[in-house]
Image 1 (tube, rainbow, N blue to C red):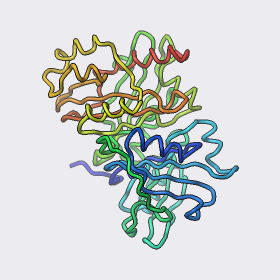
Image 2: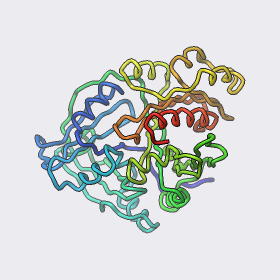
Image 3: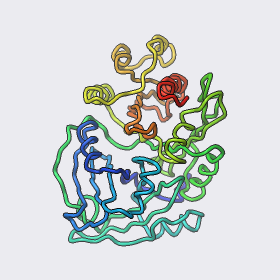
Length: 362
């Protein structure tokens, strides 16, 4: 019987620090279909930072921005560009989780503290992980509001596109650091290594990377961790590390149960995706067998398919959503498959290399 040595209920929210939170919220509302459901800023008594809460089904995104010179995040936004700063966990006991993480070797970012308003109180703390990313630890069992104290509820609905929950978040770390952070997640948070990929699995003629997928004890939280591997040219991980200024979150994968609908809506709203050659679809029936979807439709939309022992999955990747070639999104639809699309890596890498060549960074 396996035991969960660090219980995590779920990914509570993903916080981005950005230069302009109002514009970021507007973008995610009108492209990805999120509803703006919460706000914290000058009007609610926050004097130094503004926060917008966006929701779609079980996904919460928070966009935060400094409002004064001297805010501690301002130099990090300057260094990284808009970036994922916090992958927050909902936990049973914040004080136990923080104390245990520190005892197991984590570095503290924020000691346990209460946030309170008329709706009750929320306990939160935070620990550091790779780069400037943190994991907040949150429990709102004593809170009857919607998200956090000091947030004003908003009702600015988006037009949802069927995004359900965060499937996984991928971190890029420096050469030689993947196994360090794999061990950190094992030792500190009790994660297990689900899958490993080396440069034989994920490579092209020019570039390669190595990756290990870590999962929490209950399997609800999954974090692939990538590092570059030596190649003839600069890999996508090298490019990320250069333009981001170090380790950070490369992409967030969001789960849908109707990828054709979701991707069609995103394309109609102007979201650009990586594309693969049409020959990819010629070989698809032999590689993945019978699937429910029309391959012609998948080809038109550029959706990739892969199969494992438990079923198959469909996935697609946006191009970077900021000026820097850093953060992007994956849309994933699982039909039984628990894996991460190993059979698509080569086609995907070649697609990324074409984009890198256009940017002059290959």
